[in-house]
Length: 358
Ligand code: ASP
Image (cartoon, rainbow, N blue to C red):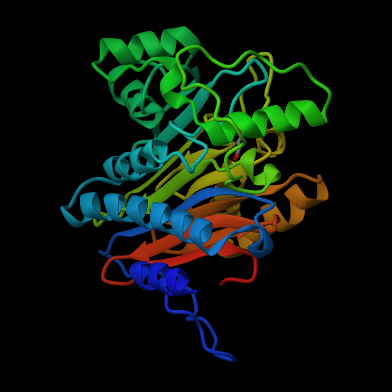
């Protein structure tokens, strides 16, 4: 109990007294002020399966990321640079399914996908199946800024990363014991072959380490950020290890512009998380922005229509974060939880994990 109070105080999240209502979410950012909304994945994430320590660790990770993005924006940095800064923090955090901590493929590898889009210019960069570049979001940004292309995949993408001086690592860098155990559990359950333990990683511990999340949440944990800078420009980015036990070079929605990632100053910015196969077919990110742009929907209504309506009707699962250039901020998900946070310049971080939080 004492530990719980300590962690809560550290994070500044004051527990609500009985009957006390949480503060309503800030849904609008005033003109001229920067704003950030981010997610750390959606899925079967329930209070009953989270210890207070685990809950606090996730919140601390989201908090670090949002403040990294805020630092860039506070120094009059661009929306694109803020997205990169925030997502690098989540890629380096083993709790999230991006960069270090990415889920494994069925062959026991980490294949990383990422995308970034600049709403001011509609420039975009994306990578898929990266195995050696430490921060795939920086590679996506380099594709956008330093190549004539929008999307690079596999070994070629890593080769380009090295050519522009981005840090390369041995693929074993991405290994985490928690993700490995989760993969083995899933493959066993599905009666699929277990790949050999990757080369160059620490020896297997004698007994399984404590599970970090529910098995289902392990499959997700993708990270994404949408920001508006002081100049009023929107940018969005998403970075992920994809879905656990994926096969055959599978690529999800995250690096696909218009599906898992989209940004336009004419409409909105979106980053998605969930089972990518649905988000690709529904072009979720672009559809939300098209509803805002062509039908004049309020952002939250557009999010609800696509996530609560189309995605749910298709039996797809997941959620999005979104923001418009005029400062509307929204999120929506049809799972039991989504790691999420928002911050408007001069305000305080509003954060949630479970469905019953605002
Ligand atoms: N959308 C990602 C994918 O399908 C997974 C996730 O969001 O967790 O690759």
